Image (cartoon, rainbow, N blue to C red; front, side, top):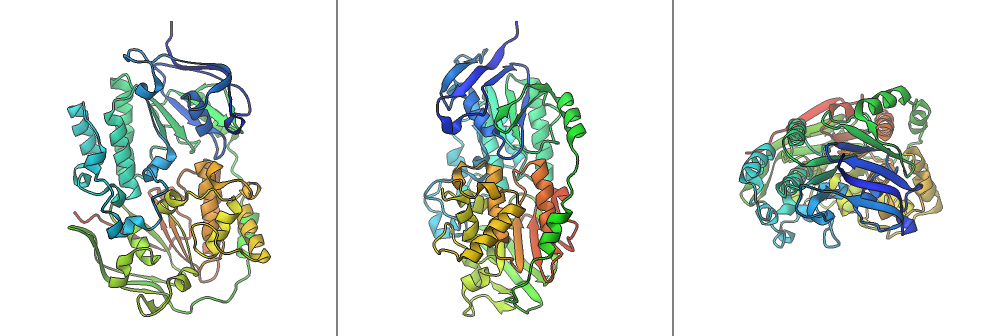
Length: 484
């Protein structure tokens, strides 16, 4: 007789705010490795939270069988790395520029303090080698890049040797070599141990080969479990590429406001070095970005990509000690940060992590007009209509009155992207902009970026670990190497 680790029959959550659209019925067999897939806002996380007992049921039954484990509680057997854990456990005390402010890092724990008790020494050695944890051990947790944080979270969780490991988009934020290593580690775990892997994936077309079955979730409905190959075949049959020509044309037709700087050099760094204690992040970096150039910024996790962008955006206090010019104006010669920021649109993993404001989505988008976290200045009616226009461009117009923290992580990312575009910036800085987006939205956002870049005098810097995410308009590349 088959063993079901999870069995939910006719499950309906008691709380209507977290209820799926239809009762959920699914069995997950002990030797299956599952991908829960669906579009942004489709209800994947809602389903996982229902499955793991976070939301008590009003109707139906939910049963577990975690044998051969000694205990049968979800707490002891199931470990879940949710999307927000990608950026570390942000709380109300975390703020956007905290990572760059050295005097605010004293209270933060170091990586080695956060790892906890380690039972399996061999697994520890393997994970430390795989994710190159050793050089991170003395670092403050807050100083880790988003990719390093991802590696730390995975290591910490895997060291607990869970019976069931649930991971939300585990490959995002990791550079290509690390993605391959993680893939082979998970593949090996599925073959060697009693751990059961459940992945929550937004990329509907990219299901790892060690996955045996797929549970599609869409419109808050949990559909019947399918074998991996049957799911992929069905997806390929239904996947008809949508034309975004009209959408792109509407962006190309936007009027220009004439408030641009006239400098040919948008960003100029002259022998810039950044250090934290005895760690050198950037070393004597020379870099010039000219008007109209579209740069792809790449490099391995922890190489300094986000630090470099924090200098350009004036979020890093060390930028005032460096020889940096923006739009032809040397930093520290009297120009206001806010004057400079008016011309920059920006989105990043750090920003997503810091956004814990439960405001209506339209207000989150409108905060981009004045570069605030939250809305402190009431926009004019014509400005609000511009915000709604960009929300429509990103396909989230109907979410405008929803509280931001009630959105799925993918919908939140789309709102933060609309926020970056809302003032039609001269310089667009996109740090991993497609994190957590589903297949359709990845294509849509890539086309939006492409159209925006084809407008007159627009300059862009984009970070991604996926070559396929880069728009066709890229003109220049810079690759950062880690200073070892």
